[in-house]
Length: 147
Image (cartoon, rainbow, N blue to C red; front, top):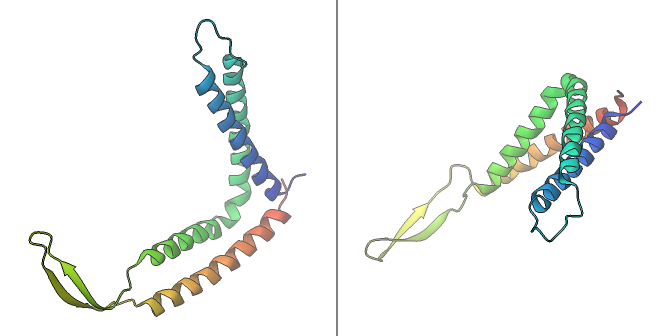
């Protein structure tokens, strides 16, 4: 019996192999008439199809096993997306000078942020804590659930 964690590693290994086979097919398919490829591209293509079928089976098993924790998986993904978004939010407050793009003159403006840097950092810290908790739960699940 395999754990879900091993199944996930196997999935990643197969994806790596698929990418390697695709690269070989792309680089070795066309050769000059006097050169011989070291790879049998049609055999590589057959390997690609076989690996793809294996990947489909593994992904199906993973989806079946993850159905009970799908909410946690989706929550983890979306919380990470929000943290990424918050890290890009402009929180600069105070005086700044804005250059007029037409005549090159500068004009002073005073800016204030509705979500200042302290608020944004507290949110990032809070969400990161939730992310870590969810990841811990999913790691435990992945190492205990067996196929």
